[in-house]
Image (cartoon, rainbow, N blue to C red):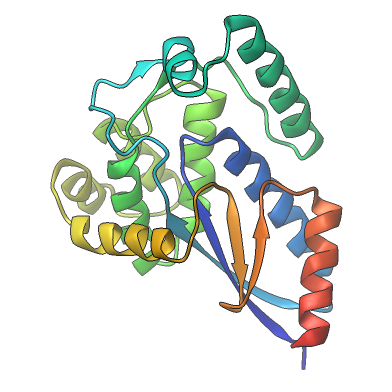
Amino acid sequence: MKPHLDIAFVSDVACPWCAIGLSSLEKAIDRAKDDVDVAVHVEPFELNPEMGSEGADLLQYIARKYGRSPDQVAQTQAMIRERGAAVGFDFGPREHVWNTFNAHRMLHWAALEGRAVALKSVLLRAYHGQGRNPGAPDVLVEAAASVGLDPVRAKSVAEGREYEREVRERERHWLEMGVRGVPFVVVNNQYAIEGAQSPEAYEQALREIAKAA
């Protein structure tokens, strides 16, 4: 019987490196599937928890938070596009940063329905590929329906306040565990992999952890 690995993928929809990391991880899992049984669940983390629903201009936000100039932002985005293309993720124009708490609420519901990883991928592409607001109810409902979730139920979740407590509890859990940046991968609640790794690095780590298990 193949060893089983349970993977917690701690991330935020607003994080471009999380888009790269999830694509890389999925490629690694596919490469190792004959030898390792893997189950992935997504966990919430907010990079901009204090941001209002109106969001903020990307360049102004990055300049204020990280002290980077427009040229530095452009260089970083070019590197991100290159890394994304290498793992099959196409970055489009992103001129705005949004609050993602509603997206995490929807993802919590999707997890209960067994669709969270698929929904996470769709939301990452909606924001990083198309520049759409991943917290907007219409975007959330459309994304949920595209992965087979009930759009009527999705609309209720998107426009209400369900799962606020549960998401806050999970966010607090990861902060208490010392997570300060994402993506952050935890395997079998024991092994941590920080940052967006290449498919090869993820695959090697999964195989080594499987042997240890």
